[in-house]
Length: 159
Image 1 (tube, rainbow, N blue to C red):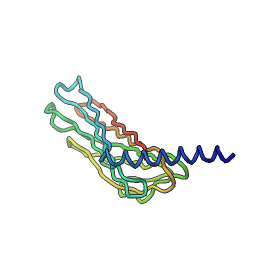
Image 2: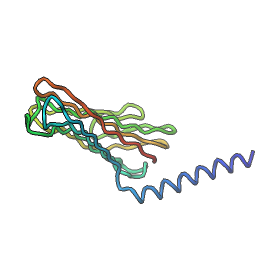
Image 3: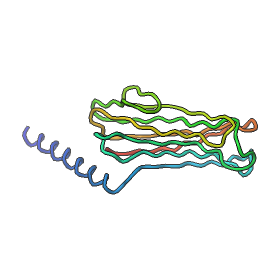
């Protein structure tokens, strides 16, 4: 019985030490996804996602954007960014969001700009409980000249 406890405790301590070392090597997590639009030659849709690499006891920050790039046309009827952030672990919940809305262990929101080429949003939130992993998914979409297209950027992280 005592040896099982020591094995579990050792594993927990090793994971904790590794997460502290990883935090020192990565300042932030980011991803970007870009899709060409065949119906609109020279245009593309780009999704960008960024989240801070901060200890879960600190305030977390994020930024997302949707970009309609090109000159045919230079602006879309609308450009939208839709994001979802999750933290998974023991008793985890997200709270105190400066953008979007929280529900349990997730935070989500959207932002739409009309007659524009970009839609972006940045915010922060706090985590309670003991998170092990986290994710951020951002979907960029648009409507221009009757054409709709989307692409998604995704981040996975350890706390």
